[in-house]
Every structure is written in C-alpha cells, then in structure tokens.
Image 1 (cartoon, helix red, strand yellow):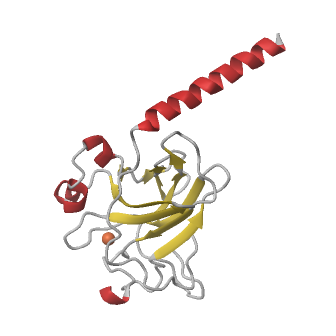
Image 2 (cartoon, helix red, strand yellow):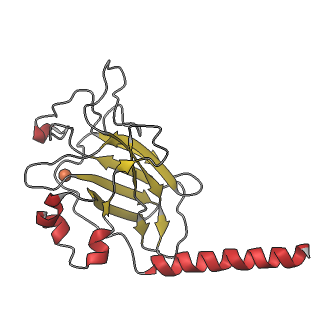
Image 3 (tube, protein in one colour):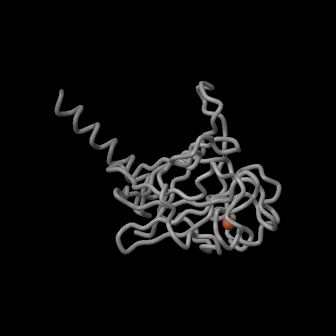
Length: 205
Ligand SMILES: [Fe+2]
C-alpha cells in the first residue's frame, strides 16, 4: 500500500516536472539592452535592500516593492548560485550614475546584487519603478550563472507608457513581451503596505 502510494506520488512529481519543463520550453526570457547606467563602479553598499543606504539616516522615497522569484533554465531546472543584479532610477527619475548627475534621492541605493539560493530563489527590496523621460518605468536586471548570462528589463503591468516604449515594443512576439511585464500588487495577506512583484527569469538551457 505504502509502496503503491510512493509510486503514485513519484509519478505525480514526474508529471509536474514534465509540465513545468514543457511550459517553459519556448519561453526563454527575452534579452534587453544593458542601457547607459549600469554602474561604472559597484557601490560600497550593494546588498539586496535598495531602500536603505548603509550609514545614512533615512529611507528611500517611493512605494516599497519586494521583487522576488526563481531563476530557471528553459528545461525547468532551477539555477542555484546565480548572481543577480538590478539597477533603476530613484523615485525622482534619476539614476545614481555619474553620467546622470549621480541621482537625487540620497537614501536610495540605485543598484543591488544578490545570489540565488539552492532552489534558485532570489529576493530584492526596492521601490516600484517610476517613469523616466522617454521610457516606461522599468528595472534593469543582469543574471550571471557560470557561462550563462541574461540582461533584461522588467516592466510594470498596467502602465500606459508600456505601449509607447521603444525597447519593449521591439519585442514583436506578444507572449515574450508580456513575460517582462509583471504586476506590482499589495501582498494577498494585506499585512503590509509594501508591494510584491514576482519575476521568474528563464535562461537558455
Ligand atoms: Fe533604464
């Protein structure tokens, strides 16, 4: 009886993995340009919480958002120990980059990095991206996993500027384009006034 049940469960697990692999097979996350504001020099404080700068006495302006998910490859295999970097402008639309004036909000970190855990999971605490001249709100992401790399940009579902964004619009396949557009919403428990945004990047197998 126990053996039968085990067999049944392992069969179910096999099916689940198979369906994940199938559903992810054609959906490698589309790449996007690195843009001009990847840090020239990685800041001293480059941890996964962008809403606070070590040694400062304030917190970033903006709607706090938890950006998290799981890094996988196109066979549905999770990728542990991947380096994940994000960067974005502050709540006043300024990048913390010398070529962009260095940023306006001194309490926003501008850039952060983390590593995926054994299950491929990662998490950042940042702000919901805001409009930047000529662009829809977006967060840049760069993933390095051994020899594999992905550079892309993440957009906010429901933003009217998405339809006019030249980089997003350059992805002609709508399923691929939509995979970069994610909801930023209150978490379902309602316990926090922070937003949750889930992004599951898929690298080529
Ligand atoms: Fe940008």
